[in-house]
Length: 395
Image (cartoon, rainbow, N blue to C red):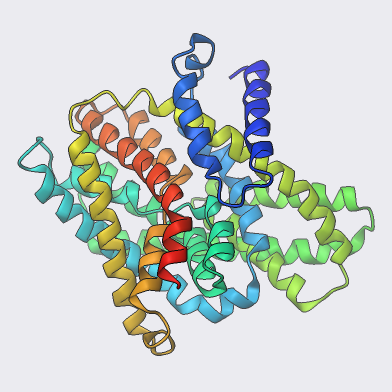
């Protein structure tokens, strides 16, 4: 991707976000993705090569770190139980149930193995509500719902990657699956990433006191966001969780002290601009790349898969709420439905799709198309529906 292409895409993102300035519920990601689809028909933009590494190592650390350090440490402590359960056990259960449903639905229409159905399920489990959390806070007026949706999305990416890695290895390389190997790898990757992230976050909260230059402090935050991610990946643990917990640790330090409010203001100024720029590029690139996968004859099945993913997520969330005593009488079916609807698919799902494509398995062409179509349907329908649905459900 050339520098001139980047500048033009940023200009388009600027124009869309400017139009959104006084429109509270304007679904910017939808417009950007659809615009990206349109740009894919222009040779100048269709030549852009969107890779899994580009999304994973360039875009994701910035998005994850920004969301994590802004996430209230108090909200995380209050909802840690249900957030952690949904992001781990809930994700595993979702993959198993949704995979079985996809296999049953797809059987009469297409040739698909059970492992292939599980791979699609693992691609569709990570949630990316960065575009709807602000809408939820305004229209639903519920910090509880927004906190659960955002907290779960920050952590479930790590679980989804481990699940996907195992299942895609079975699909493309014929690797065997054992519960012991999966659990040991999952614990190593997740705990290792979490510990490394907490350590980085703690170091940053202490190092920031050694300089009073705000610009240097912001430079340090870039090092932490990308340094924790890349170091974790280098040693074989979750870079996603490392970046997330470094940001959460920073948020925790904010909650303990007001001595660095000036630093937080400067940090917000920088990362707010970075986040808008990254999101503009990311959603436009998702649209451009999606055009390569949407010409196939199983769109009906893609809609069924999308609907099934919503239903399974709703059942998992409703069942999870029954397991936690403080949530049993505090989460109605309406709130469960809203949390389910708000978990739309996005950048992590696209990364997993491109990762599967990079493994060069001819048998995965249908899986790629079905997955990308379901992600696109999720982005459009759920983004458009979250505001009116939240108003209706929380009346």
